[in-house]
Amino acid sequence: MEKRIYYHDTDAGGVVYYANYLKYMEEARTQYLLDREIPLGAFLYAVRQCHVKYRSPARYGDIIVCSAEVKKVTAAQIFFQQNIIAKSDGRLLVEAEVTLVCLTHDFKPAVIPDDIKVKLV
Image 1: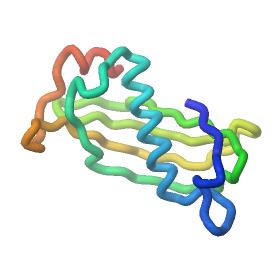
Image 2 (image 1 turned 135 degrees about the horizontal axis):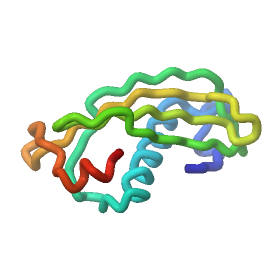
Image 3 (image 1 turned 45 degrees about the vertical axis):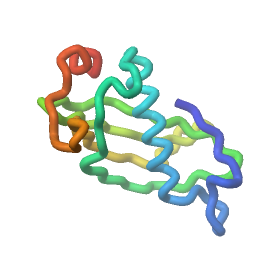
Image 4 (image 1 turned 90 degrees about the vertical axis):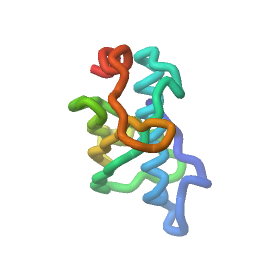
């Protein structure tokens, strides 16, 4: 997923505010699901864990490429590897391991439906 960095994405130092990378990764994961024809709202999930390494800043006007790749799926969890790179030179900006957990409507862990699980990998 490509994204242009706008002024509102940046902080007082002129670089992308660190928390915005979490939004970009969420968008990339959502696009991952849509690309596999998994309807939004087909199952309820939440981020259980997120390990982020910030390597290099993106700046106003840059175009970044956000990726999401499923590394593992268990009964109730999806483990993503995510990278954000600068389109101009391929520089790694951010890398993250993000774990999602499937939930019931009462926010208790639930088994990922089989029809969704087969589309994830």
